[in-house]
Length: 404
Image 1 (spheres, helix red, strand yellow):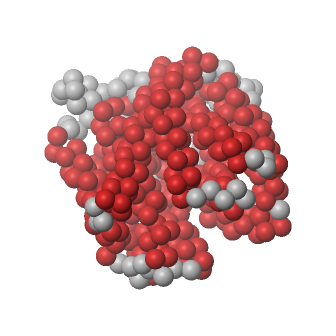
Image 2 (cartoon, helix red, strand yellow; image 1 turned 90 degrees about the horizontal axis):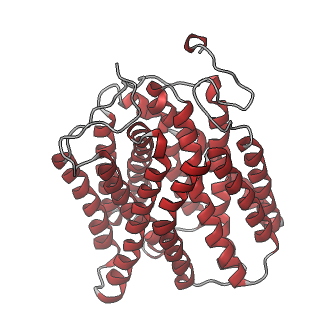
């Protein structure tokens, strides 16, 4: 059995694994961003949601992420490439169906369907990326995939503007267009791209290996810090500085423009300087940004911090390429599933707990975020400069495979 880490041979020079990963990532981002952009207005204006219902809906949305380990069971019956395409199709169908079920239980159901498609696709996308991208420049390839996602996300704002300003399409038809396009791309990929071979057959069982402990810890802390950014940074912009919908949308546009051009360059920097240096820079920068969030009083400074924050998060690809370097090639798929679930543990309880802290002191929430970044920084310093199987920590020495 081959253990090559390079991309598999393809039937066509143009229909490459990287192209397929970029197309799928763009299609996923397009549906999900439309769903997220319209959600609050749709829930309030059409479904009549209050705080209780929107809180339940957001918890429902995170459940499939916590259950991402279930992909290992599904892979007993199908290939990873097939599951990725099928998940993309489910995401499209769930998004397209959203506008037809404006009552509470209907919206919960379509959210669950959409979220299973989104999270299971994301799990497979991460696994296939680490299997197909060569170790020598995997970060650059991941940067290109992030850029494709950002380009698709930018186009969603154009669709929303046209749909609600010029064409008067309304929620239902806009959701159908977004979800339908994603579903059509999934079907087109299934009909056009060949089945790319995998060099190593993946384990079809859940795995928790001691030597991947540092990767698990980094993944958990990434999920915790991301919740603070996603939930509270944007909320601060509205509550404290009075940003309008147009202002928040402008920030989103700027973030995605940054990612389109910066993510591939960040990937090159990770390749050049290594995961330890890249993650050190990310976590140190995020700690400073969170501290600044706690005390900022100027809206323009807050907006700049928001953009810097988002740019630092693009460096998190380094934790994935660190895992790629230390992993047994047959462990990539089941470990990606477990790691995705670990990443979402914080999403279940942290927003609620920190929401209570916010009522007492918004600054305390961001100072906690800075402490999370400092913990991640300490963990990053444990990554060896030349990570490899058996050399996962700075003090570890190569161990026989049987020791696992």
